[in-house]
Length: 510
Image (cartoon, rainbow, N blue to C red):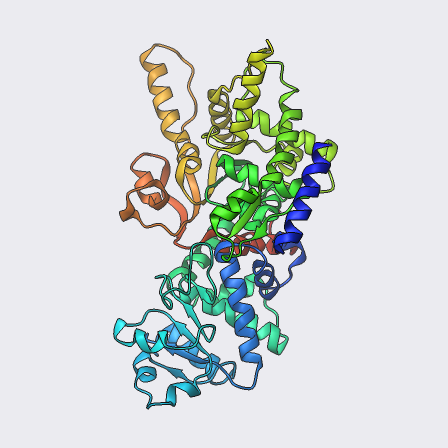
């Protein structure tokens, strides 16, 4: 009855507010880069920025009046040469001009530039001329959050991709070739182009090569760490593919990622945020905003229901851990929602543990606390979380193979806890030795690593911490195969995962 009531409330509210449902990115249905980017347009965060801009640029370049490119970089750089080809031989764009050239056009001359794509940075000396353009006629591509004042708002990012143009422009090139000229490119083919570019483009190409080597390595255990908003960004199926195809043997995540990841597993939806609806209004309607995504509170009513069912399977006689609870949730999904793909369902089927070291900082942690209070009031034993059980399981995984690799998306507790296993082995062995005990773990460090996070080291937090810094803590081999990509994971992870899928499908990786 509760489920029927909440589902009715969700549908009524969605219809009343004309909410636009987001769609999961399904790499299994994408053959080309253009199809992946099209899927991104219905996701969230950086993926949506890229997808929506690609759609708009395609429309512009397909019309009679080609958009101009405004670019203040070196025309002889790899990016400058690519922009010249886009406007020249390929004929997708009109002229390429500098911001100074645009600012210096005679009175009325600027009006002939109906549409413009501003690539990279520009001086504030020429910003006024760019900002005077009509809203909706200009797209900005840069990693500095530069755009027309007031264009971007909290949770609303129209006509902009805040990322390295060296990475974004080759993707747009692949999209335009496919949508206008009918020449689709695989991710592998895109990576060859990225390898010719500097910056994030080269980092992504290097990341793909490290991933390939990590997947080809015999006798290796591979860990995945996640923070940020990867599931509510509609990348749950990408994570399912990683588990289903054996790319990872362990997942460490924030609790919020797993809570939001349950939503598609129950056949529910997230929705696109409309900035016309302020947060006070959303709060009154029970619509929780995560940047540019809405999570109806009714979704959590469904999650509460399956959490209650899963928690009811524990008597309280023995302690459990987050990975044990997640396995119970996966088992419930298998029994009641086997037709919907979900991270915890894939993990349950593949026996991949899902760790959440900061478990109380989540909706699922709230459910456990509330359930325990009810158990206390009704004379039943509480469900006690023993976090060291997951620590022991992490140790077991790390020492189960002679080599280890790690996919790192974001930073925070998931990354630190998983990387901390090597110092833990060191400390444990020293304590056992000092105490006269013979039990020891074989020393293990990560020999492969791909880190994708936009943060810089000078911020001083773990998300920006480099693998090199971790080497001083003896977490990584000094000669490890590594790539560090300073970019939005929602734009990069689908490409890396699809690259592995292409290799597997071609029989080049098991």
